[in-house]
View (cartoon, helix red, strand yellow):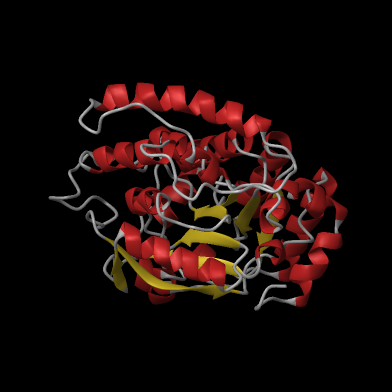
Length: 367
């Protein structure tokens, strides 16, 4: 039994929909199946770190095919991890590619293409990762509790209503972590009873190089969870889809204008829905989409998002979130952000719930 939990984190598994749709995740918790990163870490690859990025990607594509073959072979039986992981492995290759991308950074779709060892990108994060906190989080969705949550500093968005602006806008908030230190933090959370390792922020995307490198060293069979705004590049998605077991994406806008004005994010609907669909189709479909309902955005964003989910990712669970409150820039300048300068109304929430119910989406167990 987990040391720190909530009652609904136990009872949620009696929900047949949750149990069926999150079957593999539950099997990892019960140590019946291996986390994806452990499979990747046991796949040998033949490459040189000095290879061109083009050749590294060719090696990656070849290893990806082998990963899919091995992943499909694994049955419902106890998994025994090798005492000494293969080296170089598929994880090593992914970390090498991420390190190479860092020097012409396009981890996210802003594609600053700067050498982050020398210069800051839009995220204001250099090559060093900082975490503001890491703890067993009991406030996440019931199937995830307790979640081994690691909050990274820095973000590639500028959300006017950000509830974590002290983290997202201050990339050195907290403690500096190396790949080795991050692996030790993850292992400590696992040893304390975490059901998953939850990479969040800010946003974890600018720290992809550190996260992938830490997976070389982590010791536990535990779900790797990506909790993100999902504004990643296609290359980053390719690095992640093999090794992330569970996805926790945000999807809050379905209007380019809303995303640009409130979060300074261009082409948001096209990029984020593309990435969520990739995660859904290439992963195990084990996903909770977080939809933060903004006041006055029911028809431009909330309803179209629910329609999109029903059509494109119907097995995903949806957390329809009512906890929006005016913060940061919205609180400071409500005259500029008049549409979101108040809390969301109960009527708006009821309309969102009713629409999700009519579409047949599962939201009650996680909202």
